[in-house]
Image (cartoon, rainbow, N blue to C red; front, top):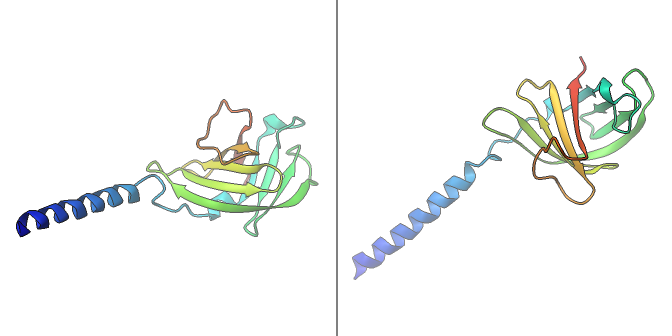
Length: 143
């Protein structure tokens, strides 16, 4: 009887460890570095349109938006907070950002740190980068 109880407890503990281990190896297990997120991001295709054409993201948790890539005066600075960051197995970096204007954003930085995509929502953090989303944007690092 004691052996049967021991085996049952052992199996239960083993199952819990397996489940906990598989959760720990999910896509959010490696925190993404913040430094590649900072910088000047541009998309000349957005010049003069509703989307922001240039965005400067700073390490002091401020950003400035520009409606054209060729102007020096923008809107801001505005405050933002990085709520969460992680890397996927392909080396892409993800950042959940809460910001003054857009509210909840999910950013994805490619493995070369040169292409930044984002989707914004006024209600909650987007669950994915959907290129067909109304609030999808893509930017390129300006050196």
